[in-house]
Every structure is written in structure tokens, then in C-alpha cells.
Amino acid sequence: MRKIFLSLFICVLSTAVSVAQTTTYHLPKTAVRVSILVEKQSYSPGMLSLYAQRFLKKNVAQESYDAYRIIGTHLEPYAIPDTARVFEAKIDNRLNNNMFTLSEENILLGINTEGKALKYRTPFAPAPKGAPLDPYKYLSQEIISAGSKLKMAELCSNEIYDIRESINELTRGQADYMPKDGRQLEIMLKNLETQELALRQMFEGVMTTDTVEHTLIYIPERDTTREVLFRFSTHFGLVGSDDLSGEPFYAVTEDMHSMPARINETGKKAPKDETGIWIAIPGKIRFSLADDRKAFKTIELSAAQFGEIENLTEPLFSKKVKTTVILNPYNGGIEKIESNPIEK
Image (tube, rainbow, N blue to C red):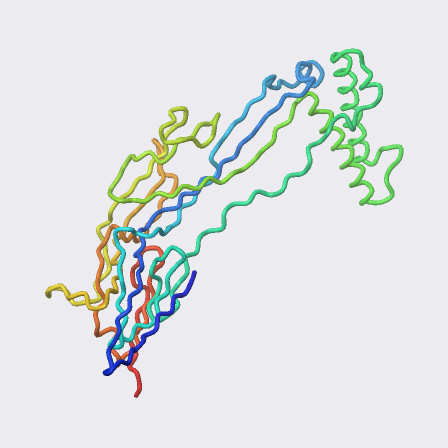
């Protein structure tokens, strides 16, 4: 966030003349940031997968594949500058409004005070992955020198069963060479389990899992019930809204027709724009992310574009008072307004 401090200047010619200045700002348009956490599982068959049933009594896939699934979703308000609501605040020596705080996107955040910064959820960061096992590091010379895959599979399976027997003997305390303490036992068991896993991967293949967060920005403009936001495929993951390989996920928006009270009195003629300072009176909406069966996530929020705007008039910024205004950074509505007399 950058702070813009605008001061009043008085030019003295033959007589004192007030020089009006302006600062240009936007009100926000309220959007929804949709985060979708997608898990991808990738399978690669082992070089001895054809013999998994014969030697390990396991049925395993013979072809590589990828499988995707949604494991989490998150919704949060998001702000973009509303290009249809651009205003110029007037600053001259008749008014006590010499400081405006704007966001990086030029959205008005505060008047005569710093305001509140836009803050968003920290994106998902996957945990670092360890190096994959190399089965050949655990193969004996006899296995490597086997004349056929069938013979290699037989020797590998024998090695696997020998390792399992050694693990059972250690855990029961029946091994010929028992470790001296618990720490040594833990290390020996871990090494044996790693060897077994590496050898089993020769038959069972390798399944790797990766998790990625996709983020979409959606701007609700009206009531909607089935607006396709994206599509999702168990074979390809997140795809575009026009890609029929995936099942549709919808943006559902409901205008709740609820707005906060105005600052100025109602029932009177609309006041003249004396200051150029406008704020939003946001309307309340309910937004849901849904598929054809149910809503996955729902959020209620105030959205600037579903409400109106209001002018803050001169009396609020007269020389007799110090008025500070803090605006909601996502919807432009007033969060806090204070007027305190200025002591002379």
C-alpha cells in the first residue's frame, strides 16, 4: 500500500487566492477469489509388473496413468478497481481533508488516516519431496546378472520374503544378531523396510502425489444460478469452462437486497458534489461454488457493485472538525468514521 499525502497550498499574489487541487481515485469492485486444491496421482508400472501376481500375489496396473481429484476449496473477497467509479477529490483551504490513502491499485482506503490494507490468504505451498528410491541400489549382483526378467522377478521376490522374515525376527527379538539398544533396532528396521519397498516397486510400480492450488478471480455482476466457472476432469485436472472433457463447476450468485444505512439524511434532494469524495454503500450477496449435485463452498459478503454510492459533503470536512474515515478495502463501504472538534 502506498500513502498519498496531499497538502493545501496557498498562492499569494496581490491578494490571497485559494488554489484547489484534486486527487484521482477508484472505488473498488468486489470480486471473489476462488482457490481449488487439486491432487494429482501419477502411476508408473514397475519393470517386473507382469510377474506381480505370480510371485507377490498382487494385481497391478500395466500402463501408466494420471488421476486428479479436488481435495479442498476456499473462497475470499477480492478487490479490483472499478473503472466506472473514478472520482477526483477536491482539496482547498476551505476543507480539512489533506490526506488520502490509496492502495497499489489506486483504490481509496482512508481519508485523513492510513486506512486498512488489502490482505489475502497465503497461497498453498507444497512440502518438499524426497528423492525417489533407486531399486538398483538394493539389487544383489545375482539379481542384476539374471538372464531374463522372469529369473530376475523370482530372485527379487525371494529377497523380499527374506527381508520380511528378518523384520519379523527383529521385532520378536529372535534374530541371531540382535541390536544392542532401541536406537540401533530402529535404524535396522528402517533400512530393511526401505530395501523391501525398493524391491516391491520393481513389481508394483511407483505412485507419486503432487498437490497444486489453482486460483480464479470471479466478478459477480448479477444473480446467477448456473454460470460455468471451470470444468474438472479426473484424467486432466482443471480445464477451461468450454472444455467438455471435464464436469462443470458453477458460480452461483444471489443478491440478498440488503444494504447499510446512508451517511446523509434520506428523503431530501440529493446534495451537490462539494468535495468529490464518494464512498460505496455495498449490497450483500451470497456466492457459492457448486457442481450439478451440491454447493461445495458458500460465502456471504458485501459487494460494492450490488449497492450504491454516496457523496461525503463539506460539513464533514469543515475547518472546525477533524474527520477521519476508514473504508473497507474490498467493498468501499465505511468501516469507521470519526469527527472531533478542533480546538483553537
